[in-house]
Image 1: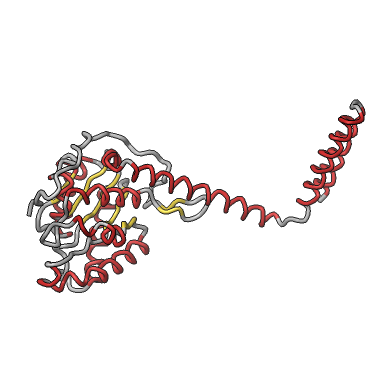
Image 2: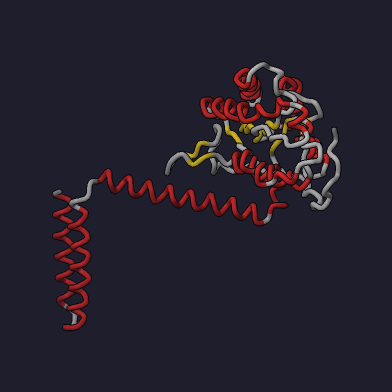
Length: 293
């Protein structure tokens, strides 16, 4: 309170000095400005400092959210540039993930995936991962894991074991888990296991949230682009891959938890990527090409 009173006194004395050398009109203008400033300073005396802090934090949070939204929109507006975001990343997965290299979007050395692969294959990729030393590891599994480990929770628990292995062997890498993409007809009619995917998604998402692992939920994305599945209802047309890739990248950027904290899977959002650019992929335009299964 004493500091604020002293500040008001200083402002008043300064105003008196300024006014002493002014003409009548200028003096009136200065007097109005000074009075406005004094009124503002007086209003601060009634404001709780915690309220000011909360207001500033909210303003910063809104600014971060707006910047994040603009960054996402810029990538979506030029979707073919998404592959440059994978310059220091490796994708592990099954036949769906194979498409990232099969369709020449990413170099094959950066896509450690194969048809029929399950999460238990992660152990066999450790040495290759160490050589590549990626900043980001994307796990894109699921279609061969349904029912293999028992329940959805059993799958989530096994996946957590693999994530812990990756964290031990590559402690600097950020791990992003992709939700299992759904299947559509005629696959669903032939195999009811596909109907369990929402349960698997819920179990894996909860596991990720509890253990500080980044999670890419593809539920809405899959609904928006359901027409980009192969006729078998399981595999993907190449036009879907850029959208899936963008969703993975958005997840890798982390979640803005509050005005000063960005949850990013043990890596700060603004720490900078270790850029080692891969070749830019060929343009899209091969709709209908069959996937390698």
